[in-house]
Structure formats: C-alpha cells, structure tokens
Length: 444
Ligand code: S3P
Image (tube, rainbow, N blue to C red; front, side, top):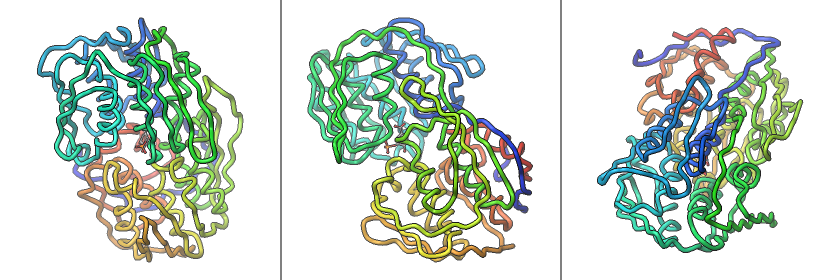
C-alpha cells in the first residue's frame, strides 16, 4: 500500500449509475457473535468482509468456535450459550472495532479464567467503563485502568439479571446488556434512550428470545428472559447505510449526477442521515421497500442537489445519524446560511475525536466553524466554493470515516489532496476506492 492517495480533480458527472453496498457492519458483527451462541450451523449471506468483522471472527475462533468464510458467505458452528473452549491466559484483540470489543465482553460474563481484551491504538483510547459497569452488576469481574483497554475479564457461573438505564443513546451499551441477559436466568430490564435496534430485531425475529419491548416517549423499555437455547439460523445481511452515505453526499454535491443504491438497510433507527439531508433540501427517495426479519430494506435514489438550506438541528436525530455527522457537516458547509448542531459529545468518543476532526477539516478549507456549549457546532455555509489549494490529511488515528470523508470532499469540492493511511477504509468498506472508480473518480 502506498503511504497516501492523491486526488487532483473533482469527479466528472455520473448519471443513471446503480451501485450496491457491502453488508451492514453492525449486523455482520452481531451475526458472528450471536450465531456462536446458537446450537448448530448458522449461515450469513452478504457478510461484510472488512477488518472489523475479521476481528470478530478471529476472536471467536480463539474461543473455540469453527467459522468458515467463503466469498461473502459465512458459516458459524455455534456451541450453545456456554460453549466457548479456550486455554488459560487467552488474549483477545478487537483491533479497531468498538462493537467487537464491547459486545465480546458481554459474551464472556460466564468464563472460568481471566481473559485479556485489547485493541489497536485508537481502540485503546476508547471508553470501556460504559460496558464494564453494567457487566459487573451481572457478576463479572474486571481489572482495568480508567476503563481503557487492555482490560481483564473473569466471569461467573452465577450471573444475576439486572435493571439498567442506558442514558448515552448507545446501541453498543444496550446490546452488551442484552447479550449478557441471554446467559442469565431471570428477567433483565433495560430502559434505554433510542438507538439502532438491530439487536432487538435479531432477538425477536431470528433468535426468538422471550422478550418485551415498549416504546415510551423518551425511552425504550426492554425485558429479556434469559437462558433460552438458540436454534441455528440463516440471515441475509442488507447493504450498509453508513457506507452508502458517502456516495449519497458525493452525488448531492456533484453537478448533474444521479445514483441508485440498491438493497440498503433503511431501518428507521439508521436513516437519520436521509431525514437530515432532506430537511436541508436534498430530495432523496427510498423505493422498493420490503421488510426482512424486522429490518426494512430498500433502494435509495439520489440526485445532485439544486438548492440546499442551512439547518438548526435539535438532538432527537443524533443517535440515528451518529456515524454520518462528518458528512452532514460537509453538506452544511455547502448550504447558504448558518447551520447548528447540539449534544454531539459522543462523536468525540469514536475511532478518532470526530467532532474535533470535523472542525479541523472544515477550517482547513477556510469554512467558518465554531464549537458551541454542550458539544454543539455552528457552520457558516456557502454555495460558492472554489479551491485549487493543497490539502493534507494525516495523523487521524487511521479513522476509516475520516479517510472516506476526505476523499469525498476532494472529489466533490476540488483542490489538490494528499490523504494518508489509505488502508484505513478497509475497517468498514474494503471496496470503497473500487466503487469510486466505477463512477469515474480519478484517484492515485
Ligand atoms: C454501533 C453503534 C454505534 C456506532 C458504531 C456501531 C453498533 O456506536 O457508532 O459504529 O453496531 O451498535 P454507539 O452505540 O456506541 O453509539
């Protein structure tokens, strides 16, 4: 791999192009972890073959689970709720994947020996306290320094169900508690701010776990009855909207272009990006909708935007667009007027400090941005933007979404770009550059 890619030219207009996206990352990782707890052979089709998913597979193999990955088909031979087999002094490495690290811990709350969990430079900076605290209440023991990796976990055979309030709007925290509940007799109760609900849908429609879900005004109430044996299952993973988002924004900001993105997971808890862009005047359409095991799958139609308007966003859509905010900031910089966003502290807890990186990249392009109180942002947008300057993006902890964002800025706004660490996008979207190439992007 070269040290950086270089982009010197905007993308030429593309019309009537249709592309598909790799399998959803959240669902791919959940499939691996949950199928390992089933009793028998599970199969996933269109699984994402990215570094994060490979990390999940590698760790499950270390726990004695047989997994066969052929093209985009993945077979997992589950050994039941308590079937992991491993040697003493085991070390699990989740690489860059927060979802793998956090959800894997909850599958270890019943282990006999202490297991060390670690990750790469970016993951070792991220907060694990948010799952350590509830998992301790189930009875697991942790050794950690400030809630950061590496940590040690030792489980217990006598886990107890808990009552838990999830106040961050984090699907990872909610899911960690839900998975721990599977291994625990009795009823675990969760009061959770809304966040992506893939775990709930998998539990209900695929694993057939006895559970109740009630949606209240502010919170979702979830009750799970543990220790139900999970039967083997098959699952077709739909396309990832977080990957699609880069191409949606590229189309919106390029002239005379049109794109169809096929078979995308448009689960309502994930389409904050589409709602927000349409509030800004984008006119993105979702067609051919069908439901699949609780998820909603459809095709997304997007065209170059004629007129975009600034937005004053309250925080109710934050969680449903949490991985897409960098792209939303970019679009805000192209709207006439001042856009504002609030309560985005979670963005600084991702693979890199994304709120700070968003500000840094926009300022590098001479766009006026200020940080407001409560982790908010104000962006002074303008329709007219022309540049032939040189831009360099590096030292961003190889955050895949910063790499892809920078590529989309270069291809849609122009300038002379050098973007370092080009293998970073393999974390979530190994075909990213190939897909851009199919639309005619010139990248060296
Ligand atoms: C994810 C949830 C989100 C998201 C992450 C994947 C998941 O994190 O940012 O990329 O698969 O549950 P939080 O739930 O911590 O916000």
